[in-house]
Each structure stands twice: as C-alpha cells, then as structure tokens.
Amino acid sequence: MPNTYEQPDEVRVWFHPDYSSWGGRWHASVIPGDDSQRPDVPPLVPSVARISTQLRDGSEHDGLPDGCQAAEAPIEAALALLARSYRPTHPDALDVTAGWADESDRLAFLDRVAAIDDALRRALGASWQVSVSREPGVTEVRLEGEYGCEWPLWVHYGLSDDDDWPMLSDGVRQRLRAWAREAEPDRMGDPDPQVTERLLRDLRAELGDRFVVDVRL
Image (cartoon, rainbow, N blue to C red; front, side, top):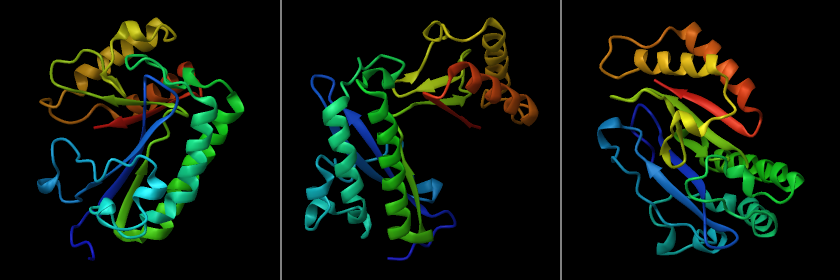
C-alpha cells in the first residue's frame, strides 16, 4: 500500500549480539512516518533470526514491506563474518567493536552492512526510509540532550557516564557538559549550530574511526 504520510515509513534493521556465544540475531522493525502513530518502543516485526529464511514468504514476514527479501544475500554474508570472527562483548561494554578477532573481517562487515542498506533502498524505493545499524562494525554514539542529564553521549545500552570515556580530553568533556545544558528539551531553542559542529568534529577526532557520532536535537 502506498505511504500516505508526509514523512515516509521507516524500515530499521540491526544486529543484536548473543552475549553467551558467537553471533546473534538480525532484527527488523517498521516505524510509522507519522509522529502521532509512532510507538514509544519500536515493535519487532518480526524478530529476524536467519533473515534469509524468515523473509522468504508466509506469515513470518508480516509487517515488513514487500521487497525486504532483497536483503537476504548480504545479510547471509554478514552473518558468515560474524560467526567466523566476532565474539560479542559484555552488554555494558562501551566499544562493541572490541569483539572482533580480525580487523579485515570488521571492515568487510561494514561493506556487507552497506550492501544491506543499498539492497533495501533499491527494493523499497522512495516511499520508505531505510536505517541499517553499522554495529558491531563500529560503535554508534548519539549526542543528545535530555531532561536532567549532565552528560549527552548515548550508546547501545542507553545513556553513558563521563567515566566511560577515558580517551576524551578534559576540554572536550567540559564542552560536552556545557552542550548538554544547552540541549535540555525544556530550554528555548537548540545549541548554537556552529558550537555543535565544532564539538562533533573534535569528538570524532578523539574517538577515532571505530566510533560513529551523530547528533539528535
């Protein structure tokens, strides 16, 4: 059915590690483009373990748009890399990339994720947004203000603490705390865009290429 919302619906795909063994599961969810219809917690539609078999046909792929089967081959390739070379880190570990035994496999995994993203975008077209997480090929970090939060860095397990980031300089830490105060939702307006851009630039430089930092205002 064609999407009737101003913002297209979104298909989200991400990998969730099995912390007791090698590998894990791929998940997918559909997020309505209309903000008024977005659930507080995105539903899993469905839980995609072995997505190659789950998405082929039948009720197991109810809720996902037709065309998601196009992701089958690159997801199988990504699963093969994960099974061979990735041992999930502790659920509370900051850097999810630490579980890779081989750097070339980590980089190859990022190529497979890009292929998943490309396959879904080609199959679904402009009527759907597509979001494919790059974890655990990188650690995804979100810069975001929240009520009462003095620290603005969020990761896969939620809000982090400043003690979790020993690699950051004192200067960047101070700027992050100042940004968090300016980004609290009950303040009028967002932080200065130039301040945010400089902070993102310096934060990315200090964290290195195993971390990907985005901002949410």
